[in-house]
Length: 635
Image (cartoon, rainbow, N blue to C red):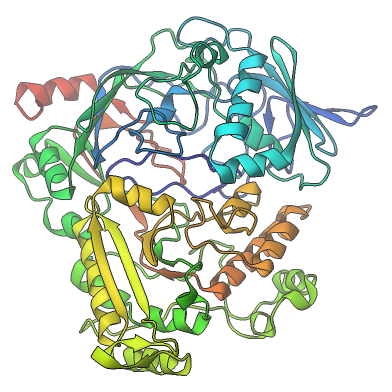
């Protein structure tokens, strides 16, 4: 599982992809050599179970068009504002796509589970116990200022994230790594703590972005944890070309990019420029798309998708509306309880409040019936828990002893309640919710507001950013109406994107509609960052602040699985216990990518199932682009 470093959002960009998502792949032993005398594996890539689909001499990834033309521009819409070009700062609001300027030692393949191949590193070696990993850097790798990427740069970048990175990431990696040494100019060794799981170690240190040490040390004010408009020198395929605060950011592909001919990069990074145009809200952004101010849109608003794609450029063929299959499990989005709030300590209170959310009404009235209900954290995959546990999953849960409640072992897995779609307030569910709240000690009193014995109201404040889709905002507002109807002191608060970012970071909310949690098809340290207790008090990737000994035990035990079948059983159990803890009210999901773009973009026939890849796998057809410009469809 890759480390959960922050990623920048694009307007209507589907939330970050599932960690380690893929189907099981055929074992390929080519290129994996092990020296019997020292049990050291030397390879061009890494997978925990040793399966690599691509041999050392692979020409390119299977899902790219290796002959894709270079040129043209991809232009997207950004939401809200930005005041920084540093994506790793703890403060401020970073501009979109700033991370595309940085390479890492290894990168994951989008058609596999947990398989990584060299970028800055041409090879690696590690012992059988994964007590260390040694990366051998490519001597030809250079930063965009022409200086070589060295082992010292790798070590320096690693230490930056430990000393100045997001606390949840810094603490997790700090526990993993006991030493980081530059053995020579192009050889790096990471030594791992014997006290931590062997899962997620190599891919975590290997996936860390690499910066120029010289650039940072040239000015003492340059820090990883501070917002700035000065861009750290990187070695990636794109470089910042220009920016206009809160209006646009432009990145330009590097003609001198050192890694453009690597097998992992062939057929990728095809645009000359990538431009992000910023808009205050969804309405302005959609109008901008129709006017040609930007050229590709990943739609997330069902109302717009169903009712607003009828403008002239679409009917005349200048714009294409395309639905592309998404094979990854949906993001576990929904209404997240802040478990640090005392009013949510009782799970029955959380279940009662959940009954006030009418997904079926919201789907029919706001989403045009295009969303599907979700219960699982890995919905629709082979890991989704169903019914009562049995077989390998039951055997796994029993290994955890008395920590597993009898309800988990003997009762069917928790599924999302159903509501009637004809009206917003499903009276049956609201009556059940009221009874649960009465039993929990929240009685209706003065002003028809529920209070506890201390006279405190059952407060639920839900802030949301002004830039979110109208249908999502309406869903939040109508949920609040239902909460108010059963005596909850509920409110929805529309705030500007910068303020929302700050409140989310400081966990200044009772409940928040969020997509910060990730689904999973493999195990690793990222699970602990999202669902574990150690960083629960401050992790940006755990907005509920979930701290469950049961969840911790399942995650820890998943690290010790020795084959795919054992791992799958552990992750099915994880889905079950996460649902048992009940810290998210699930909303719906869309099974396809909804894309709209000016008819000059093309993509490979064999797109991988777990990524849309529009940033790096698609390309511009120059003849189509010229045709659009000739008839005035493009500005």
